[in-house]
Length: 255
Image 1 (cartoon, rainbow, N blue to C red):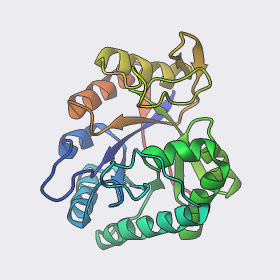
Image 2 (cartoon, rainbow, N blue to C red):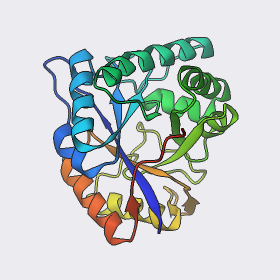
Image 3 (cartoon, rainbow, N blue to C red):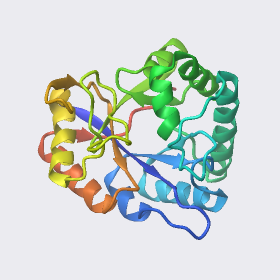
Image 4 (tube, rainbow, N blue to C red):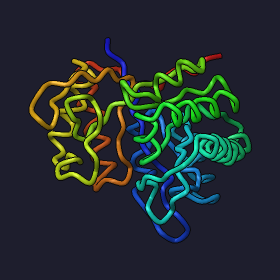
C-alpha cells in the first residue's frame, strides 16, 4: 500500500489578524508546519497551534522562514548561510519552548516560502539549514522539495528527510515549482489540485506546465492552510487519497 504524510502550513495568524481555519484543517492532516514568528505567527498563536496539534494527534513541525513579516516570507533576500543557520536555530528554539511546555516533542522542520525555494537550489543555504537542524536535534526530520538541494543536504547531514510534493502548485518540467509571480503557478481548481495530489501519491508523477510528464517522488504532500476553503479542500483530498488506496500517516521520527 502507498503511504503519504499529509502536511499543512498552520499557525499563520498574527495578533488580531487571522489567516485560515486551523481547527477545521487539523482533522484531515497528519503533520503541521507551525509558523515560528518570522513570516507569521506570534507566541500566543504558536501555543494555541501546538495545543490543537496535540488534540488531534498531529505531528508538530517548525515552519522556519526568512525574517519577513510584511512579505509573509515570500520575498527572496540576499542572506549569508551563517545567518540562515542562526535564524533557523532561533526559530527552532522558540517553537521548542511551547512544545516542551505542552509535554510533547518536535517532529520535523520545513522551511517556508522564499527560504524553501532558495534552499532547493542553493547548496550553501541548504547545508546551513540542515546543519542547524542537526545541531539542534539530529532526530528531527527535514522536509524539502522532492529532488532538491535541501533533500541532498539533509541526507549529507545524517538527517532523515521527507521529499515533499504539492497538491496545488504547478511544476516546471525539471521538477521545480512554478514561481508564484507567474500566471497559473497556483492550481485554484479543486478537482485539478486533488487529481494532481492523487497522481503524485499513486504514480509518482504529474503534468508539468509545458504539458510534459514530470516525476515527483514524494513522501509528503502539502496542503496550504492559507488557500480559500482550506478545510474543505483538506477533507476532500484526504477522502480522495484514501479512496485511491493511499494510507495517510506521519513519518516515524528516528529514535
